[in-house]
Length: 471
Ligand code: BYC
Image 1 (cartoon, helix red, strand yellow):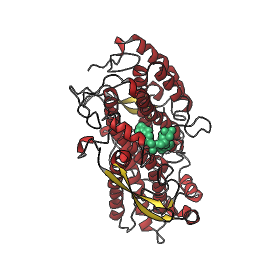
Image 2: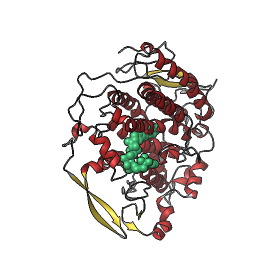
Image 3: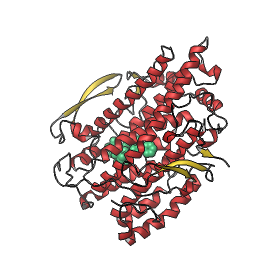
Image 4: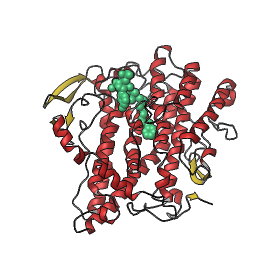
């Protein structure tokens, strides 16, 4: 599949062969750039940033590094190469040929899935827009902007699908994606987490660890879709997404490392007395972001998810690894609250598809927590971080109307309120983190006191490389 890089919109989808579509996307492009300038990263727009740009979907071409000003970034449309003879892998349509066009009966559902996915991409850029002003290093600043421009490209990937396959409706949705705003009262983003504030760099690392990881599992599920152009778009997005997850997981690891070292050296075990973040504060941020991101998988019992699965629109991550791809007769047992106790409830497996996806996500998060705990142990401390139970602090689904401890035990609203600040970031926690992040650290090789340097630089460059040029 050839890529036309000289085109206004770099692409491997033969835009030149479809002048109507090309014109529609070229009309959307300036609106996108206006959106980027209005609510994208604050400041730094004229700086040269050492960024990765996709120029091909192959192993070599997708990671092309150079200095770029963000508004000049080459946002393109790239789909993974088609798999000849690809068959649908699940649901009532398993083993049928995949679709190259949208079947009329699935138009509304597919549009909704694509719009929901698309909406998260600009939302995250808006949420993170003020972080440059308090960055802990040039290395981290560059990673923030890399994540931001690639979320922009993922929006392009979804807008291409809307324009190409959904006609007038799709173009309207493309415009609406630039009109909603993260955290806005009257035109908020669609999913709750994408309206939550990202105020400091601990939020940012939690976001790229937990929220981007939801993205990974949702994209893996959509990469199974019977609608082949959606599957191929998501496959290529996953390639870029890996770096975002790396930024989150290693970012938290570096914060934890510095906190653990300084906790160990303080007679009272307080890292905050030495310019780092106390480990219990990190746990409370983790509780907040992990629980919020569990909501992004939808309700435990979801007829939407059952329909998506039955009709081949959305599968489960790495569907081939599941023993049963039809799930017509199986059941799943959920543990839910009934007043002050937990009871078991049986539901048809198809209705609990969201829970299967959530399971894969939780396993992947646990792997990262184990890694952070090894870092703490290595520093000679006994403290351990943990994932709260999946029922804790939920706003969507079966557990939303009840209160639970982080261990998942049902409690009253009063008990919950009395412990809230022990379990979730308090105003004092937020102030303590913000007090450490008041100015940008921009000298090459220098790092803020609350975070350890990374093990290595980006693309084989040294850690003290000039990742952002200020002249
Ligand atoms: N907030 O049947 P239910 C990413 C709504 S992140 C608010 O349980 P369903 C990224 C739901 O819409 C990945 N509302 O849910 C990361 C429904 O509304 P209606 C994003 C919510 O439909 C970082 C009602 O509650 N990808 O890529 O099975 C940076 C009942 O819903 C929420 C996708 O989301 C919520 N959290 O599943 C950048 C994939 N959850 O019908 C990017 C596409 C549910 O009553 N989306 N509701 O009006 C989907 O697959 C599904 O829409 C969901 C929800 C998994 C989100």
